[in-house]
Amino acid sequence: MTSGETVGVLLVDDEELIRTGLRAVLDADPGLRVLGEAADGAEVPGLVARLRPDVVLMDVRMPAVDGLTATRALLRAPDAPRVLVLTTFGHDRYVLDAMQAGASGFLLKRTPPREIVRAVHTVAAGESVLFPAALRELVAGFAGDRGDRLAGAGLTTREGEVLTLMARGLSNAEIAADLYLGVETVKTHVAGVLAKTGSRDRTQAVVAAYTSGFVDPRFPVR
Image 1 (tube, rainbow, N blue to C red):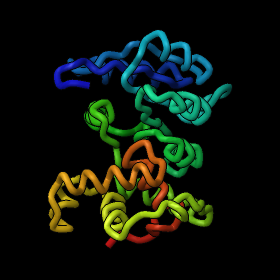
Image 2 (cartoon, one colour; image 1 turned 180 degrees about the horizontal axis):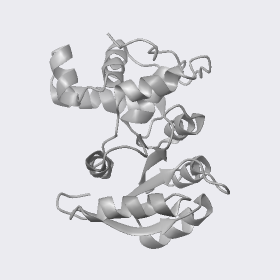
Image 3 (cartoon, helix red, strand yellow; image 1 turned 90 degrees about the vertical axis):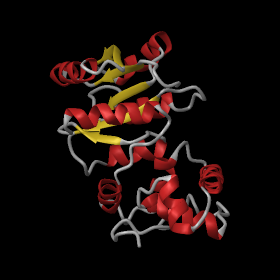
């Protein structure tokens, strides 16, 4: 998206009260516009095709087609909207699975309105909503469930260092300062990490780092 464009949002939650509250919060921001609502994941593909939202706020737990299934289906398309997962509980396996599938972040339903607005703008701009402490806590709850996604990724030593700092939530500029590199060089390394780990964005790469054991989520990163 280019600067100044209005961000279109689709709300997906089986609770009408939640959707109403989110609509009020988002429509109060002049840079956001709620394009539509869905009460079930089964409605999402048709609404996305018709409304073309930039961001989908997706509840993970719905009675028929859940948010995880809907997220996986959406993100198979190369021009898919960004997905922000909504959850009542931070320790939810569905949330972790949605992040592994490529969701750009997750928000608790009790998140303050201003943070919800900021998160939507952030992912619409192509960035990820990455709260390192919350993500570590989420993944640590499933610490025994390791994948091997990075085993054959072939990361260079420098790419491994960059990924470790990404897991701390550092921006490209902060990583550059920490490693005494130029920002453009860091961007190149980040792109390499994303390509080699098959990640859609930084959040998915960090989740892969945690779930593979490359970074231990139970301890602060250096």
